[in-house]
Image 1: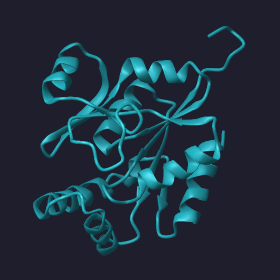
Image 2: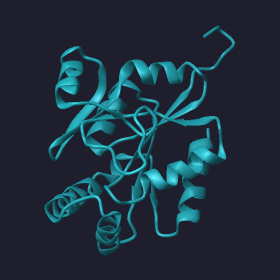
Image 3: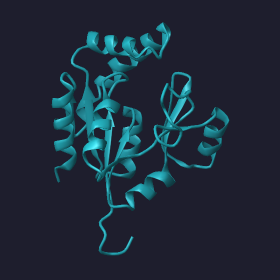
Length: 188
């Protein structure tokens, strides 16, 4: 990066599993080529249609734990039986492009990111209701009953953290939520 280039900005998106974070951000990534995703690493198996290096870096538990030992993660968490995390080298490379880089991570990861990148803009995506969240999780058809119930319990705790974010957006109407999140991201 030369002296005339501006470094990229970092935006953190969080919210309970099933609230629509990925759906909202996928629409925004299509709308604006200057807003790009940070690709997280995970040990969970790919869902139908997910591609390694595009949706996630799919790692074995052994690979993930080795990278933890090598201090390659900006943040990571164990959620249920799987790890999720942000690889520092990949994030730093994307920030050097001068684009806005979006991290979609859980609330614990967001706290860690804020310590290292205090100027990161943070946005919490809220489900309209707890019952709608449960309906969305069941419609995904990717989790068993125990996993759904565990995700709902975690969601209750995550929602309590909404006040730690710069902004909160309720995803009750997708188009409105996309517009609201986009306007927050592009505001200076």
